[in-house]
Length: 223
Image (cartoon, rainbow, N blue to C red):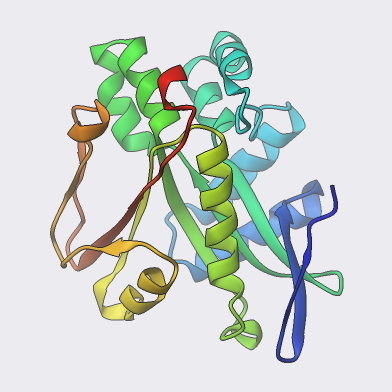
């Protein structure tokens, strides 16, 4: 299905999944804009996961079989990629923004020794916004919030129960994430996931604030 075109004052664009090597290469720049560590490696890993058919393969309402297959084929890293996504904002053929999201791999790897069932439950339950960036010339047109909104929609459809992430407190992004519907937590305050059956939490780094959103979904019982 062709993504709907979003029209704002002076700008028309669509939000869709990234396609092809050229678009995934753009994520190196977007990851750098977002301040991500290992920006080039992250973009390459997502491209390789796309080539093998793993990326986003378990991000629909019938995710159970695909997630099991990803785990069988590539174990924990494969399952993480199967529940990850790369979205782009495209205006007149130009990629003007990008977002990557997926299970919080650091938390998942900490849970792995507890057992595969716990790790699998966490992979299905949590979606973390890893990176979000819009080219400077296109900011202020709702592109960033449109990318986030689409990521939340996909997470909800795929049975996730919470979307979360972090930002540098000094960057002033609290208002942005609040407008996108997230609860923005005070600087330095962690987010606990015990209410979702996950014995872990997201602890912000120095100078960071967290944001989170609980999702209502009919698929929760399938995880």
